[in-house]
Image (cartoon, rainbow, N blue to C red; front, side, top):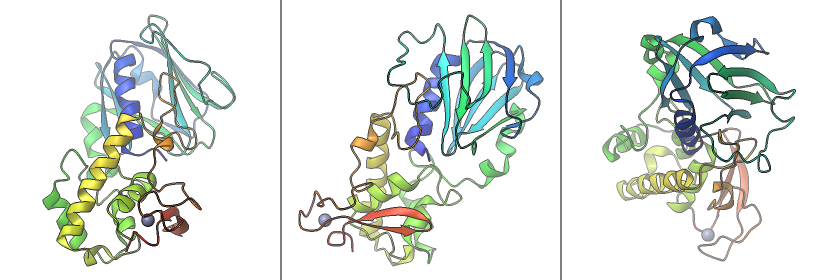
Length: 282
Ligand SMILES: [Zn+2]
């Protein structure tokens, strides 16, 4: 599932390509994933984008906003004059655009089109008044985010209160926003911490190391435009590259690049595939 680097990369591109376009019509092909009345956004001009954890918000000039969570396989693809070089060859869109998995089409002025594709259909799009966006339950409950409110002090307070495994805490969006499985796995390897360790058992120096590791792997994720694990593509139709630069995630059976003594092991923690070096991560 896309995490902070993927959603932020998507949000930045949506902002770059969509800002200034007006919405001419909306073709909703699947009602289950679309909530609200699309008529409210017709004629609205896109003025910017925001992100709250894994949720993106597209704000319009007419007092309405489009909220979206792409979940496992949702993809926004832009085609139009603001995209100079679309890359159809690298596009990882099952069925193509528009195709059998295209669930919503936003027709924009000046020949712009925004497609929403979703094979698994777990993602959602919601129309809402801009003034109500921050009253949304998931935004109200969202924990502080790295690079925003998640300071080292706040991070320490969160970790020292919980008896749950550290990896579960890192991925709990009500504790902190934006970190999911890939980056939690890599940050814990980087910090040499066993993902099963109880959160409150970490020493201050371990917390400090882990905090820095989280920022480090998220920055790498942002640099590589996110990780295209399942279906993630950016609105210009390209894939992220972080999956080729992971530290531990996906490395089952490979020799640990740090100790060079032990192979990575994989187990499930909280239902998510977790990769560890049994020698380095204690
Ligand atoms: Zn190792």
